[in-house]
Amino acid sequence: MGAQTAEAILFGLALGDAIGYPTEFMKLDAIKARYGAAGIQAPPDPALFTDDTQMTLALTEGLLDAGLKTDLDTQMNAIGARFIAWSHSPENNRAPGITCMRGVQRFESGMAWRASGIVSSKGCGSAMRVATIGYFYQHQPDKLREIADASGRITHGHTAAIAASMAGAYLIKLALDGTPISDYLHATSAFTSGISDDFDAALYRVGHVGAWNDEEAALSHIGEGWTGEEAIALALYCVLRYPDDYTACMRRAATTNGDSDSIASIAGGILGARLGLETIPADWRARCEKADYLRDLAGRMASAVAGQRS
Image (cartoon, rainbow, N blue to C red; front, side):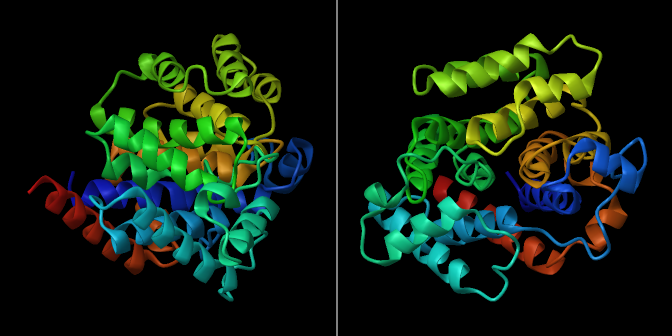
C-alpha cells in the first residue's frame, strides 16, 4: 500500500473528526437549529481535529518508533511513550477522554501496559485511534488483532473496548482489501466473535436497522457512540448507508446525538481506505490542520510497510 492510500486514511479520519468536533455533545435538535435541517455540511476553516486524531497520530508514531516487526512489549512501550508526550502537550486541550488520561497517567507512573488500562471502562477512546494498525497489518490479520488488542489495553481494559479496538482496525483492512460492502458486518462480527456480548449486541443492532428508512431513528436505536461498541457500530452504519460517498457519510456521522467526532472519524478512516484520497473534497483537505505533517506521516507509513515486506 502506497503513501496515497495512507494519506487517504489519515485525511479521511482527521476530517471526519474535524466535521464532528463542533457537534460533539450536541443533540440533533440543537445541531439542526444551528446548521439547518440537513445538519452540519463541512468542517470549519481551519478544520481542527480532536484527541481522536491526536491519539491516532501518537499511536502511529509509536509503532514507527518501535518498528513494525519488533516484539509486542517494545511496540506498546513506544506507543505508551507517545501517549505520555501527547498527554502533556499544550495541544491536548480538546476534551480528551477521562479514561484515556487516567490510563496514560497510570502507565506513566510505572504500571505495565497490560495493567494500566481501566478495566471498568468501555469508552470509545481505544477504538477511535486504531485505523493505521489496519493499514500496517492489512495482510497479517493475526498480528492486526494482537496489536489492536494490546494498544487498547494501555488505557481501556473492558472486553467491549477490546473488541471495538480490534474491529476498528479490521474494518480498515476490509476496506483496503476491496471487500464487498455487504460483507463488512458479517466479517467484523466473525473477527470479534465471543469477545464481548456488549459488542456483539451493538453489531446486531446495526443489522436490525439496516432496512429502516428513518436514519435518525436507526442511529438512536444503535446508541450515541460514547462507548467503544456504539462508536464502531454507528460508524459502520454510516459507512453501510453511504459506502461510495465520503462527504455524505461524514455529514451523516457528524449529525448525530452523541460522540459525533469519534463516529465520523472512525467512519472517515474506513471510507478513506475504501474510496481513496480524491474522494475527500480538496477544499476540506486544504484547510485541514497539520496537512503537511499528515502527508509526511503517510510517506513514512508507506516506507515502513515496504520495509516490512523486504
